[in-house]
Every structure is written in structure tokens, then in C-alpha cells.
Length: 158
Image (cartoon, rainbow, N blue to C red; front, side):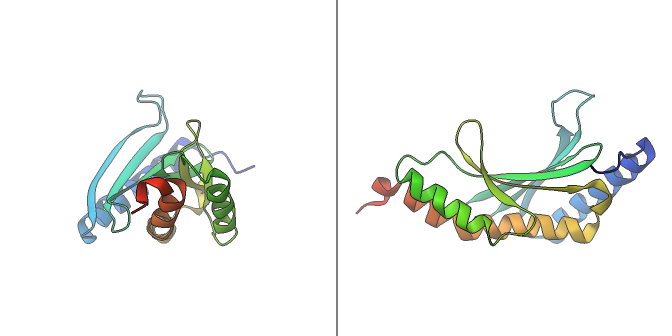
């Protein structure tokens, strides 16, 4: 289990992430928006940021970054639940998971496809934030179109 962060250590991480998010937005042309809230929209929720970026294969890619007491979590929505070729879509997701480092495809409660990962709070650095967001962005860009064409094949016929 990861080490529990003290309030001061969490405050330092919040400042680090906040500064990185805003600098990333300023320095990166394809960042459309950044914002901060909490995981449950109350003052007691975990600090949460989103970075919304313009993609090519997928028009918009939004990465959520959530800072917990022990773990920093990140995720992005990839696509809705496949309507057809479900087994083949899941097979492709599992095969893609085998090549990913620090992230994995998963199925949400509504059967939508997500790309998620986490790391211990003490591993959060600006370089790691760059890697995390870059990995999620690049993976969605590579996987989105093939997964969509497989999971919604009849809509792409013609």
C-alpha cells in the first residue's frame, strides 16, 4: 500500500499539478480547456482536474486527473459500449493492454470503454504528468478509429 500523504505533502502536490496543468495549456496548441473541481463536487472530494484536448482520430480527448490520499488516478473516455463485434472489441482491448505501460483499457459501469491508470502520489512529477497525459492522448488517437469501426461496423458500411 502506498504511503499516506500528510496535508502539507498533498498541498505541495496540488500546487505542482495546478502549475503543470496551466503551463501545459499555455504551451500546447491543442489544449482546448483545463479546469479543476473535486471528485464528488463537494468541498470534501478529492482534487480533480481535467485537460480537454483536440484530437485528430477522436475530435475531443478529455483526461481526468484525480489526486487521492495515496494514489494519483487518471482516465479518459474512449468510446461508448460497442453495439456489435463485442467479443472482438474486448479481444482487441486486452491485446492492446499487453503493450501499454502505466495505463489499461477498462469497461465502465455503462459498458463504455475507458483508458485508466494510477500511480502512487510520491511518483507524481511534472515529467510523469507529461508521460501520463501523452500516453492517454496517443493511445486514444491510435485505438479510437479501429475500435469504433469494429464496435459499430454496420454504421460504417458503404
